[in-house]
Image (tube, rainbow, N blue to C red; front, side, top):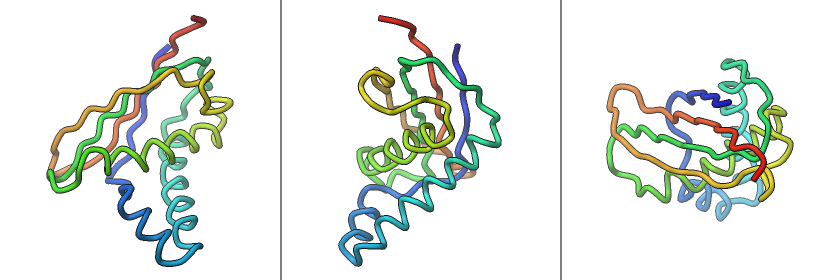
Length: 125
């Protein structure tokens, strides 16, 4: 089974997260919590079914421009999206047994920045 959902807009990058952590020990936690809640909203809106693990995840990041580095875009997003999938009970955990790996793709869409997330069940190995 393959399921997909879309997160409208952009999530903070790893640089914003690091700056928040450095500013105050609570700022980083607040940024992560707020970002994760945003992702959870889109998971709920998509009415995703529970998926059998292991899975492979395909992330497609549509940015409004090319100003942010790709690793900056993806690093924090991976963390909050996978934690949100666990919190929403789409997957049991986000460890080695549950997630075999992921693929990132990047494009520019000035009119509609977003993240498309595809979960692919790969079955027992």
